[in-house]
Every structure is written in C-alpha cells, then in structure tokens.
Length: 567
Image (cartoon, rainbow, N blue to C red):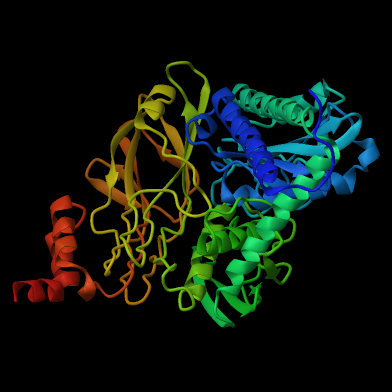
C-alpha cells in the first residue's frame, strides 16, 4: 500500500491518526490484561499502556490506564535515552526498569517495559507498558506493607536494562528477576504478558507506518501533543488569576511519625499555573514518600479533571504542569527513601489541589474523597496445593459530594482507577473466604450533596494460618467536606477473634491470622458538598430508605431539613 507523504496535517487526517494510535494502546492494554496470570492485572487491571515518540514524549495512553502511571511513562523514557544513545538502541530490544530513584519509576512493584519501533532502519517511536506485580520481593509479602524504612527493603530494584537485545532474551537477567519474587510462576506469566503487549504494539505501529510516511507520523505526533497543550492552556486561563493555598496531613508513615503536613500554593496568572509544594514535610522514614514523577502525575491528573476531562493523556498535559518542590521532601524524595505506599500520598495531593482551587472553581470542586489506596495483602501456604500464594488488593471507598450530585459509593478514586476484585475470583484462586462485603453505614459525609460511602470487607483464611499486611490512610484524619459539607467516615483494620475485635495499626505488618479469625478492612468514606440544611427532603428520604444511613445519622445532620418539610 502506498504511503501518504509528508506535508501539512489536515484536521481530519490528524483525528484519524490520533484514533489509530489510540486503538494501538487500547489493544495493548487488553492483550496484557487477558494474557496476565495475576488477579491484580487480569481482574483489577492495574496496568497501563502508551506510545512515546523517539524523544521520549508521551503521545498516547490508553483511557483505561492509571493516571498515576502518566509521568512514569515519560520518566522511564528519560532514563532510557539518558543511558542509551540512539545508535545503541536496536530493533528487537526491550527495555525494563522499575526503580524510582534512578530509572523514572514511582515504586518497585510497577515494572516498566519499553520497545523501540523501527521503520526502514529509523527509530520512529517506543511502545511502553507498566504492570503492577503482586510481589517484587523485599522484606514483606506483596512488597507494599508498612514498616519498611529504606527502598532496599521494598524489593528488587531494576535500573534501565535490556531484557531483550535484538530480539534475544537475556535469560540470566530474567532469572534474577524471578529468583527475587515469592511466586515466580506468576511473575513469569505477567512478564510474558508485558513482553507480548510490547510486540503487539510494535506490529500495530508497523501497520500504521505502511500507510503513512515516518515524517508525516512525526508531524502528527507533534500536533497531537501541541493541540492538547493549547487546550490545557486555555483551560488554565479560565481560572481567575490569584494565589490559592491549602494544606492537609497524612495520617502516619507507619514508623511513628504522625500528622505529616503537605502544603500547597497555586499561583494562576493568565494561562500559567504554578504548583508550589515548598513547606511540605521532609521525607519520612516510612514508605509514603513520593518521587517527583508521582507528584507531577498528581498535578497533571488534577488539572485535567478540573479543566478538560475529555482531553487525551499525553505530553501536552504534563508540559502544562509547572511544579516547584524542595528536594528531599515528602513530595520530591531522594534515595534511599522508601516509596511503596506512594499512592496514598498521591491521593492526598489531589485532595489538596482540589481544595486549593475550590474557591476559584466552585462548580468543579468535590468533597475530599477517601484519599487512600487502602491496601490489603494476605499470604501463606495454600493447603490445597502446598504452594505459596499471595493475594493483594487495593480497595476503593467514597468519592466526594459534587456541586450538582451526590458522591459515589465504594469506588476507586482519582489517580488509581483499578477495578474491584470479585469475591468469586478471590475464593476460587486463594484459600480465603469473603465472609461479608458491603458499604459502611453512615460513612458518607452529609451535605447538600452527600459524600460516597466506604467499603467493608471481612476475610477469613480457610484451613490454614496466613499473614496479613496492610496500608491505610484517612484512618486518623477524616475526609473533609467543602462549602459547609460534613466530613466522611474514617477507615480501619480490625482483627476479629470470636466476639473480640482488636483495631490494628494504620499500616500493620506481619499480622498472623488463624482459620478461626478474620480481618475486617474498612475503607474511608468521603466529604459532602454544601450545608446539610440545604439538602432536598426527597434526597434525605432516599438516604433513609436506602439503608446506607441510620435514623440517628439522619436526625443528627438533617433535622433542619425535616423541620422545614413538616412545615
């Protein structure tokens, strides 16, 4: 088929090209999901796929991808291109990395793959994917537990290396990856799924290059990024000029430091917004520190969500994020800072950004959401097979009340859009029983529009003793409401023995759970929007009938509404 030559990119052809690239990353995403072995990828979809140009700029990311992975893609590419000159990158190479301090990652379980796309011997682009591996080694099963004080304890650190050289796997290197994982068979399957997604992406890019010249494709790359950048700048210009501030705290770092402050000043001038995080706490001993890439991803997500939710994820969004930090702080940590639970802090950054800009954009504001990435990890020996197992999940919670509607119940929010793991998948694949699963009554903050409710899941090991590790946030400090809305409920971990219940630490590690014991995971709710006295009586009645809110809650928060309705 003849190629379309270089030349001016007309809007119709540009849209066709953008859709073609989108189809590539979407197909890569689904292929990785359907090929993976672990429930965390095949069921919960904790992975992302993208295309970057030859300079490492993000051109397209699958819509189903995680926003927190946005800057990880470009971080990986910066690390690849800094280590390998273009002339040392060969057709058939596949790069792999995960380290946040030297390889552009955000935490070790997220392993990044990148494969170059060559057309006619010329480097055109890279196809990239990230997958969260349920275990990457380290001192705790799942590589995510609290109690880790340096990154060396969190698992295998991978700098940028070539896992494939000119199409040939470096088996010795792959053996090192597998040896450091607790469930090597599962890791092998997930790695193979990532490799397959890379190869699929390369094939699909060659198909596009069979229709369009490489020069024309590069022009389209440039214009796709440029038009996103223009849309973002236009959105920023719609924010009233001014200085907006907000601060909040992290519950703890799992190693004794509590109520850790994060401070933000946003300065908006015309189409420029500067996010200044100076004044935030120094990095902490526990593993809630953020690499700068994760901070940039949080800012990029927030701007997109507030200003133009339909805008595509690419370099144009990232380039609009002007971020100022102090090195060595919670939001720009330095080695050997541990970072495994960085998603908790990313969620808090988003709440803070939304809180800061609420006065400027009241119709876009929301009450603080569950503000967490509540992590539960169960591990042990499966009595059915005699083999080690590891079940990891991050559970959702409440999404905050909005200016025109209630928040959502029991969902993942903001930067982590992974799916719920079905009970059937848990009980089929692991020696665990889900005793109960549902919403937590009264956990949504009252308001003109209420916040969403948190989740409660009760899990019991079957026929064996297992180990539980967890990481929570918004367990000490409840998610706040906006414009007079009430705070939502906090979360907690509980060990139940018969009728006795023991509340665990916010970030418990190494908890032994017997077959006659249960772990209760309760996730935070979310804040409401507007004064509760302004809630419609019909909505209050619906709250009562739904069973999500008790009569005592209704009386406490909506007595004025009830009085007005009764005349």
